[in-house]
Image: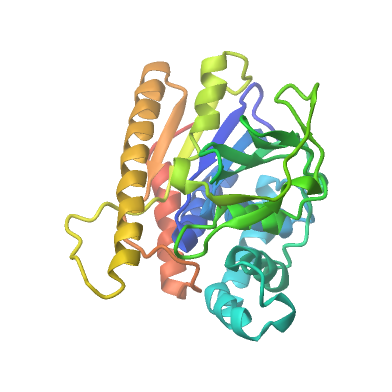
Length: 331
């Protein structure tokens, strides 16, 4: 049952497997407070996108009620994460899956999620509420690219209807971290494109767009939250940001082995940390002033990967997410 008048906007950060589990813990607390029914908007990145996709996958493409989450969906996701090591399977399938051997690693990730986690749904099957933005970034424009029920695209290129887009592919694009997984290739002429107002048709150039992990642009998924706040048109009246980004390291030793690859990865980490630091500061200042939201951060060090977690790791991260929001004593 909805709490009358409460309309929640939720941002779920990237961070691989640790983000998936941490966010599940945050959502467990919200479910116990019967607040999942009040979530009207979700902005997700990378691991956060996988988390939401798993929720829909394990609830017949319907948004979960608080009761469904606690009794069935969360236990099912837990079993799915333990059942298969998707990162290991991704490596194996890259070698032995002959029909898809020429696919990009990002496309193989999408195929692996379809096969191992039954992530077969399409964007057109999603309910209208909560509105869900699956965030990536366009290599060609450097702008936020998102997939949602209403439209998909970025502000420079225009938008198209993604009703037939497989959720696994959208989520893989959102999780396609440079160096580790790489770009998702989107054929532009596969869709009919329109301007930002949906009024004028835009002729797409031939070729492909290359989409990266949304965390490269905004790992907290805060840009669309800010846009709603600044526009003054949003009906949302409470915001929850769950940040499971990597904990800052005090010292990173330089190594010559794979030096250039390591240097690129480190450069991306530094850039992302600075962007997230600024965004989270602006957001915290806003909610402290308006008293209309919370910011939750994972303070525990855990690798950024998609490896199958150990049971004790899952339980620890789930508890961390749960307790991090419980300490805020909201509602």
